[in-house]
Image (tube, rainbow over all chains, first blue to last red; front, side, top):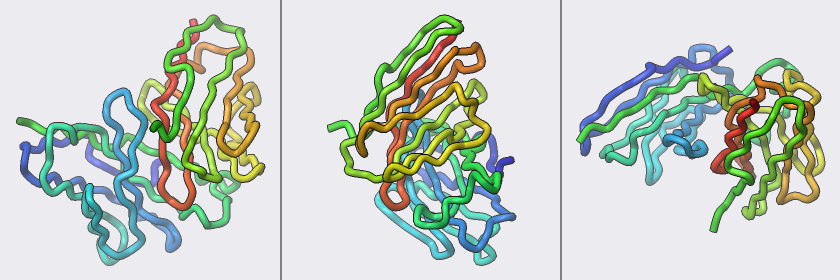
Length: 119
Length: 110
């Protein structure tokens, strides 16, 4: 069962900010929010992750609501190369006890949001 | 330099055959993974291997067996291939939190 909900598709004009929402209302206290993207025919690429504070790196910003039940990935100036499927994932950090399979909590990427950047 | 590499990129084979997919990472990571992405694009974890500890996803058939000759390699061997095994298989590695994925191996079982 997916632990996140994302819109199936979005369009964004080139040069504008792309705001990709994600709902994770059942997130646990020790689970992080991760974002990955997958450009056609390539392996997934890590973008950013966070626990409860907003995060920013050279690729994107991650805004997590105070109740942690949703988050938004922001690509500040979308380019054509940002066209991809974006996955929002909640999971425990690497150092956490490795019980995610024994408890049936499998690491699903879900269906993601297909972002198309339009020239 | 390629961080995570997989061979072959494409693999076409007949039902019932045995095949292997190789994965190598040059990042010095301790943990490696195998994922399967099916036709519906769901990316599901199959195995995790960390410092000689293999963590098996119980839903994976025992026809699939990961083998790690050393920390930099995690190969996937598949026995008695079935039509439903057709998918793209991704290898990944990680050290702390970020996972680095390989380019994928597209397996087609005829």
